[in-house]
Image (spheres, rainbow, N blue to C red):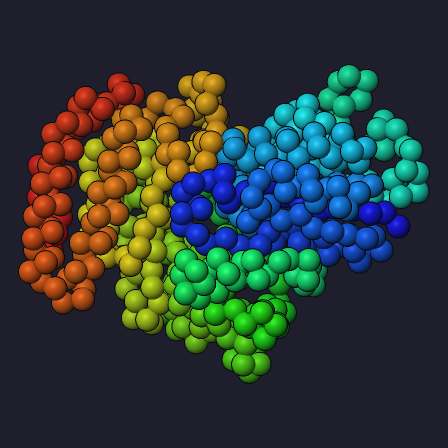
Length: 492
């Protein structure tokens, strides 16, 4: 039996935007790996960086657990880990160095590590797993249990998908994306999580308590910009009965008021969602929950099934109000899909959020205005706005990698800096982001019946749009020839 510490390096306090937002979730993938290693018969502890004060708290945890092996396994269900934020990489490298200095074998896995294993090996990691990495992790643990003094060369011999330094050189045999590993089953190691620490922050910030779970791993769609270093285009879904049982467990055990379902695509098929609704209601386990989905999956039947299951909010990857941009992204949806999905979900009393992406290759000013028009027509309840973010392994990255300089990652999620030459500079896109958020707020005044306030705010917002458009020429980068079109008021 080995003493193993499993952890991750996403410190909420290191991401000012997310700390201010105050919606932390336990690291599902990290907890799943902890549960797996425990089923293998090892003594396992968890270091959860999410609400930790800093790396010094990790050092104290390391001293207390004195592990033989440290597994830094990033949470694949946290979309921010896909962005490979620079501040979190720095934290991971500090943690690796501390564990290495204590004499522990250090294994690292995650999106950033899969893309840039050399950075983590340089910090002192003994092995870096590429992709989900469950099969090589199990074998590495088996080998070191059999021979604690095994040398690195023999430890990683004949293992694909593992990077290690052998003879002063990085050794790595990459493999293509593989399906989610079937050994990740059952409940994550919830008992290792300080639930009360999460509950306290949620109730202080929002007045309710939310926990997370996932019904599936992966996504079968092929958007050009979406990084998929963990599962590629594979998609694996749990049974509806199993997911309903976990939701019931979280409700009864931790008295959660809300669930964030962290799937890239929740449900996918309406038959599954209807079965899930039946199971969760039969066990009195339904909790209001939030999902991520696609507009083209929201039939009237799907909206009804989600409502019956208890879905309170659905976030749709809208990306743009320009069909030309959506097609360029290989998104596979239409602007009309976005509007119809919003209507159907709204009719089922489900709040709708849109994820919006600015600055994609080939986007013109008229495309940005089309996105503004989409927000007006569809009137989502909320939006999240970002700029296009090139990550290794995507077609988008290959198209712009020659333009990337020293800055290849954001430091934190509030960075919103362009890392390639889009049509406009970062400042312009930040202004557009702010105005789009303001537009959603202004539209709410009409929804709640404050017509006079809506009218006054609409005129003021139109003036701000006019002022920004009047200065757009000074923000052009020269990457695109932008054609202006006559503007009409976006408020109806």
